[in-house]
Length: 419
Image 1 (spheres, rainbow, N blue to C red):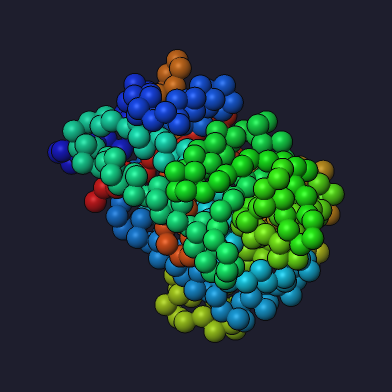
Image 2 (image 1 turned 90 degrees about the vertical axis):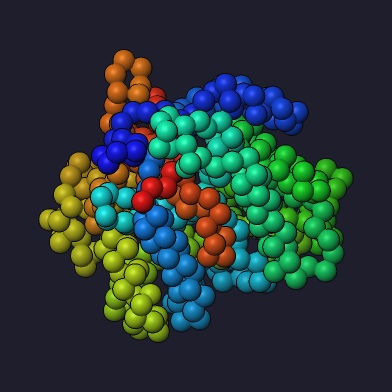
């Protein structure tokens, strides 16, 4: 550690509950959020920051832009959508599909994009978290975001929804947004739904939070109560709208009765983990016409990924200790397995499902103060992006084999820049 630098491995804390409470108390729309978080998700905000160099942040941004450039290629879309469910081949117009989450592991100088998500949670919680930060040491003071910068980023997030509406080419003004999830008040991230609602309301929009069962489709119009729905901010994990509860949303999407963001096409193009096998393959990228500079960036930045199938099952079982196994269309670290912990029974389940095998890329580590004694927690870094532009960068601290938001001292954490 050089003089004047923070100790990046130390357990210094930057979250100041008093500052956060003061910031929220000054905002009459937010006074109830902290109690809601404390009741619903007490380990969702970490007291400790994570540090990244400017070079690491720029390389992550470059990978995000590279993925966006490849996804825009007709040859990529043709290859991916040919294997996707029919609803993913429905083009809703120019809307991109909303917010994306690019999750990276950082370890020393290694940077690995481990997955992409179409409805990444936590963005508004991280905006909230930024309002309650303090310098844990003098060297960190200049790294803290100021109130003006946080407000400006909030406006960019709200602008994303208006941009989706503009790109979709709908002639009428955007007026009513509905945030949809199964039983929203029971969701772990329900406080974030409320934060999104209030952000968009301040931007002049009418915003509701609803279960899909509260929606109805009549004469080509999607309704919530007695109000027409323009845009659905879709937080469902039924990505292809296959469940009976999603029937109205599915019909409305296919009929163009409302704009769905994210939509099934976006999930197929970005979030299906089988895409990482293509995006990280030098040979596949050559076939679809990706320039050499982008090929090199993606090949070096995405851990080698294979689709698990009968033809490679024996080799993957032999190599399993160096692999991570993930369901192709999974989310939230569910049914994810480290290869060195696999049993034969679980292996048979993997073979019967749709899985990818990804080369193990170790997560970064951070010492965090926890009840009793400091603990070494792992972390990943999530880049929240829209249209190739990174809107926010945050970390997730955890114990275990995957992120869980259940670890004392863990949860979302700010990422501060050094170097």
